[in-house]
Length: 271
Ligand SMILES: NC(=O)C1=CN([C@@H]2O[C@H](COP(=O)(O)OP(=O)(O)OC[C@H]3O[C@@H](n4cnc5c(N)ncnc54)[C@H](OP(=O)(O)O)[C@@H]3O)[C@@H](O)[C@H]2O)C=CC1
Ligand SMILES: N[C@@H](C=O)C(=O)O
Image (cartoon, rainbow, N blue to C red):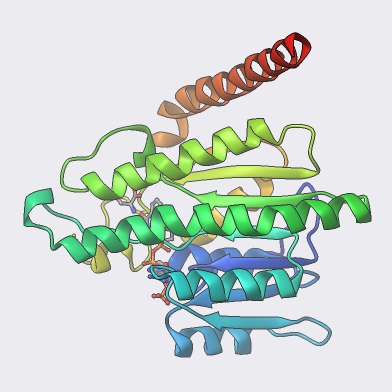
């Protein structure tokens, strides 16, 4: 795996959720050795293997075995990440059942929302304040990558709950990027389409997704895009088709943010 050379900046300590999966593992492997890692997932054995693979002299590689679908799991990861003093937050864990909505077991749908919606929401709300404070004090910039999906841009029958959850994470990340414009943080909504990982099998779709791309390429592109753009769409089709709506959405977020700030100013002058 070539070491990342084109990142727009280096980070000292990164939290990677979903590190035991295809894209999360690729992100952890693509980060420079200078970046300490806090890796999380439910699979303790896979986390231990990652520590073996990624530990280097002078590099901290810690793990948190936690279920991000539960409040205690999200709390454990947030507390560990704050103690680790992260400056790069990669909200990547995700899951979702493939199939007709009415045939799905309700707990599986609840898990999808808990992991894909509640976990990024809680981790961003809990960890960004400390990240911003530390970045400002150090004269550096923090970074956030939220792994959404190409399907965040359109509804997907038979992946209805999953795609809706990805629309949430895309919209939240785009809005936060505009809201935090001027703050010492860069945010990236990562929107790949089919990528080689365990996702297809776990979702019940099948052994793999048609035309699935290399997770290492997704990881390298994401780390290269962070700090240079706010949304990255990746994939044989989405790479071009979704680029335009992604730019339109980011522009709308920025324009709305400016209008709201101007409205705030007018309201405060009237008080
Ligand atoms: N593969 C694809 O085609 C695409 C994937 N994505 C997104 O990429 C991200 C990574 O998925 P990908 O690598 O493909 O899939 P994998 O199934 O390979 O990895 C999923 C990761 O999420 C973690 N995870 C799932 N549920 C939980 C949970 N309840 N608590 C803690 N961790 C959990 C898994 O950890 P563990 O098993 O250890 O619990 C694993 O590390 C996801 O957000 C997915 O939605 C987006 C577009 C395309
Ligand atoms: N995980 C994939 C399902 O199709 C995707 O998000 O594209």
